Image 1 (cartoon, rainbow, N blue to C red):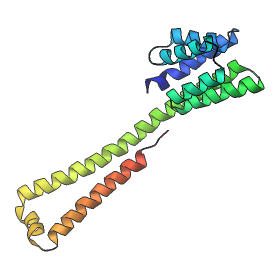
Image 2 (cartoon, rainbow, N blue to C red):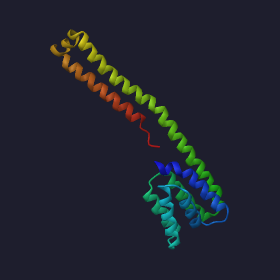
Image 3 (cartoon, rainbow, N blue to C red):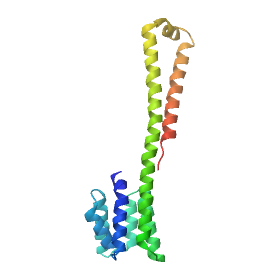
Length: 178
């Protein structure tokens, strides 16, 4: 998502704003002005809610409901814990930015690594289908035997079903929600 791609830079900007003495409302306003769409709308809405006097906890809870990414949940939880316990908010947001950036890099690496396996599955499915087609064109007697023998059609159906199950299995294994 584009929001996740923008988040590390937005958090760095927010950490710089907090480090320079701005409160959460002004830091969110600064991020809203500097970040591009769609993240600017979210931080602008949060800043306007804070200006209207809404409690930061309710503003952050609503943000987590609107933007259901783990990075936003962690950000909201960290800010709320900080408000109760104190500490260096700028350093905390910097660390969250680094974690968001690491997750983004890992997500890209995971996509790149799994793309090769997905392509291999595609090759096996297309290759076997082409092999059957070429074989039936060059040597029709081979395929005709499958169609005339009593066990031929069940064997072809079983092979097709196993290929479908294998394909779905590989796709399921490679689908990682991170």
